[in-house]
Length: 304
Ligand code: 13P
Ligand code: SF4
Image 1 (spheres, rainbow, N blue to C red):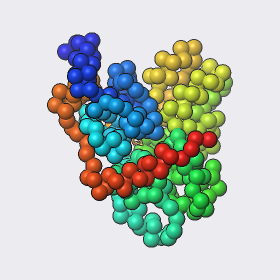
Image 2: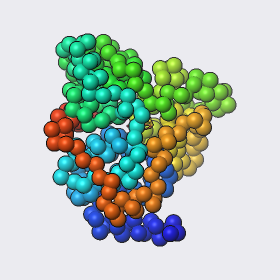
Image 3: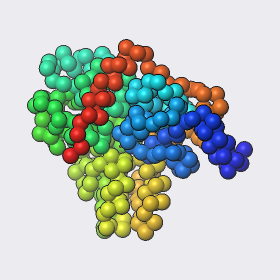
């Protein structure tokens, strides 16, 4: 089917099904162009919780759609590609969380949203890259358990001064960014500012002018007077950065910054999901209720 017809067909189906199409900032360009709302993990989970639509089509990875299903259990949540997982989320299990609690009794568990519903259910509170420092600072405890991302964990430890016990998970896409990649880019673009996602290793974050979530990068790029930006996160972010800042240049320090899972979803997959109303994400009630507590606690943390 030609591109324009396919888009029209998706829009017609979405209206018929009363569906909201959400897309993460790493999705393919054409998916971001199609979506009703693009955003980071925090923003999209808030949209899922607040929408009046009956159906949510989540163009992202499994844990994101699962968060939508936890926060909006009365809605139908579809993920166009059931195989779009997150390797970091798979690095921690509920047993892993219980093990950390045994090792560090009394320390609250703060779990990055990049995790399964079952892991969230074992946790005290969730965080995203946009609110991690705020969430940890909101806790009375001086000692916390952080799962699953060791890089985000080290970043939180540095910015909160709390004693942090880290799980050894990581994002394979961000973790492969090397210091040489950044030094080369900074040498090639000496006037550029470097913005990085906190999933990058600490030696990369040491070189960053600004560290933030994917949506934080849009604000930073818009507000900062620099003309050139080196971007330390997944390549999908470039689409809107370039669209929204026509006079500015955005440079990826390496071609390796691609999350294969985020690139799976195609327009055909979105159409098929709306036609068949599948694949659908559901979370068993017992897990969902406990996972929702951890997400609700995060959403209740006041903004600075
Ligand atoms: P954000 O919450 O910053 O969008 O990050 C999600 C993610 O998966 C980063 O790898
Ligand atoms: Fe998971 Fe990394 Fe892909 Fe984000 S970029 S979905 S953390 S593998």
